[in-house]
Image (tube, rainbow, N blue to C red; front, top):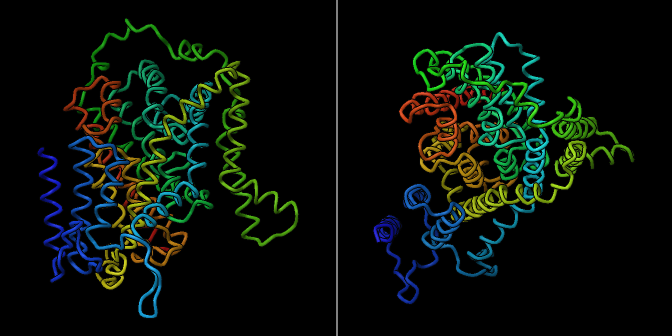
Length: 505
């Protein structure tokens, strides 16, 4: 009942904000189909975001239903046509609400859906075959044991490129414990370093579904290599800041592991590796990740050089993100076969689809909300006030994403929703263009800003917060000092790096 009253009150605020002398249509209870402009439009948008956040975080409505419901409500409040309106001599054609919603939903699936599925499936296969452990082992050998915090951070960063950070932490936590026992370093420092490494690539680097979805919404679905390059670059300041914070907080906070008698712990790193049987070789473990990147890189090069010919056509075909990830998937299947688990492929595929399904639908819902916002005239208002709005520029997506992340907990929801609101840099009517983010480079930076915002911050409404806190043997109040604070530090550091890069573009 409280939720119902809150929604009614909020809708009333929207109506009052919009009031400009029009009459309410008694038969259906909505305003006449006249465009809302100016401050009332901004108020309607802000109230819609508040309703969405409250619905997801406080009233536990599924993000898909919350975003779709807010999109429909906003469309009605701002006066979008109920049905398609044909063009006349005086007015252009207008799409009805149903058409707008359908177009926003389908365009998201058409542009990026398959890529998200392929990326998630590769990640699950790497996890189940022990390839993720092999990648982590390679990082340890590369960095050495003298810097365990750095080793575990880089390990997490590599593993989380294809694997969700929650799963990645569970996979790598035994390695973290084994490294801590070997080096007798701070358990808290190791926990924070691992969490930060996983988090950075999770929100910034494809083929994790969030960055892929954001790239698709931004009009960069065919240029994932650019997103990967920027994601790697922007990860650096975030990881550096997180590394020093991990060293600092490790001296201030103690976990249960720091107080335990290490002589009572018998499982070693080698015993952990044996649980997976024989680990795959380094090349085959890297292939599902590296080969798609190489194929996309080669395709970008031949396009940039304006080369032609049959083999160029083949290379461009193989470099298409969907095809490149398919090649990576084939190598991941080879990993499964070599591990003697090919019979589990169907079950693994089902698990991957169950994981990625909600992400796909939330991404599509974000696209719907973005289409409604564009159709409502919000972009026109931004353009009319470009002198003021442009001062926010690249910080706008960071702020929106950070608000959504902090309020409802899910980084993926924050990324996909914000990306849907901004739209594509290829569409003149999009908010991205209105903010001056109208080139591939600036659009890629906007995706990075969305990712940086989606880090800021992880707290009690985020499942990852509890994964890190519980597996790290910390109390809840210590979780706020460690996980929440390191994500704040990372988000600010990443955004600072993005701003610096934007000065040169």
